[in-house]
Image (cartoon, rainbow, N blue to C red; front, side, top):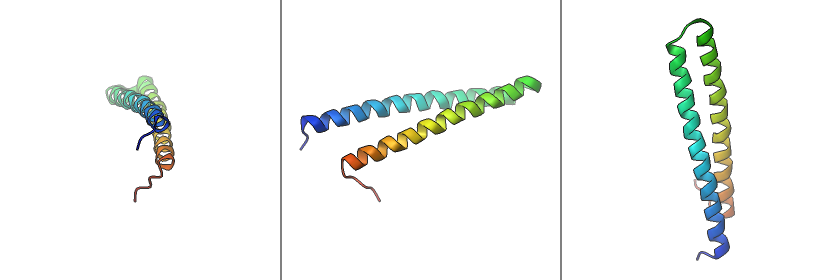
Length: 83
C-alpha cells in the first residue's frame, strides 16, 4: 500500500537516479571521446587527452559511487535487501 509519503520518497529517489544516470552517460561519452582523441594524437596533445580521459573517468567513478549509495538508501528505506 503506497501512502503519499512513500510515493513522494520514490519520486524523489527516481529523480535523483535519473539525474545520476544522465550525468553518468555524459561522463562515459566524455571518457570515450578523450580516449579516442588520445589514440589519434601524439606528443603533448596525446598526454593532454590521456589526462582528460582520466579526469572524466574519476567523475564517472564518483557518480557510480553516488548511484550505489542512493540504491542502498532506497533499499534500506524500503526494507529491501536483495541477495
